[in-house]
Length: 394
Image (cartoon, one colour):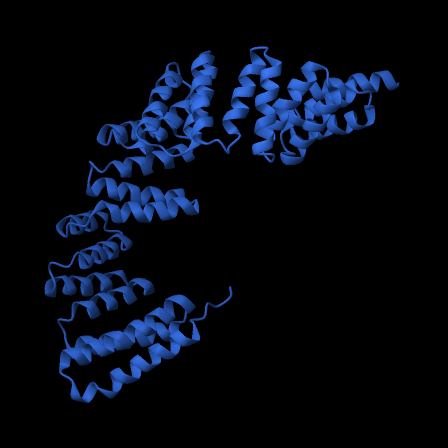
């Protein structure tokens, strides 16, 4: 792995500060001398963590130790020495030093936070929770760390920190939101729904909580889930959810429930709020196509293509409309574009193959049917089409 280098100007500045600190050691009182050594240790520790340099870590530990000798009650130096022990994996030593830092500065929340981290790293979860509660460490810290792990895709570590946030404050709604997202990511939808429901109960005006619960209910698909999901999508919108996706998902659910008129009303509102987007137009075009109003469907879908030409589902829906209108050349053009944009969707390729067959282009149809089977070996429609063509050619 390439070594990360500090900016040269920053290196010179740190060196100058270190030199000044050393030159003034003989004339300053012990606490200022300790602060100077602590600053030198911080420079070495920064190098050690950025460059993974063991020699710099030893230097940092030595400087922090000098700082403590000059001023044993300098809690910042004690905490820094505890950080060194944590990096080295010496958790018991870290706990001992960090306890000393709290003794000298009992109102500093950072000392409790770092002592708890050391206890947790050493396997003492109960002690860590006691320390964090004693120091009034806020759950937002653990939620923030959980968020970092969640964004990186490390669900296991994200769960650890969301659970810690929950244990520190059982009424902290965002902890349940984080837990729910993790459960949803691993397919534990019942647990996800339960977590989101608790989040909504604790903070009923938060649009993110409602959206998350609606999305999990939509995904779970139990009896009554979709109807309940529509309620929470509307709550998310009503409380200011700033994304067109809430409207699109709500419209899709209403469509799935056979409530097309409600779906169209929601999608029309989305089109008015986001006039530059094509997603709501595509959804409206799809509904009108199903209702048999092909001219209106074509109009909405063409507008959607004009606004977002790289959205494959719109091309696919427009191709279906042209197929129903008998405009085979235009249908093939849009099927091809849908396949170009999303080449791994079997249904796109199957429809394109069928269109090639209707146009009398057997060679390209065969190629597409084979692509369908490569993506979906159990696709009966593609297999039957190929067998039928082979039977004709015998």
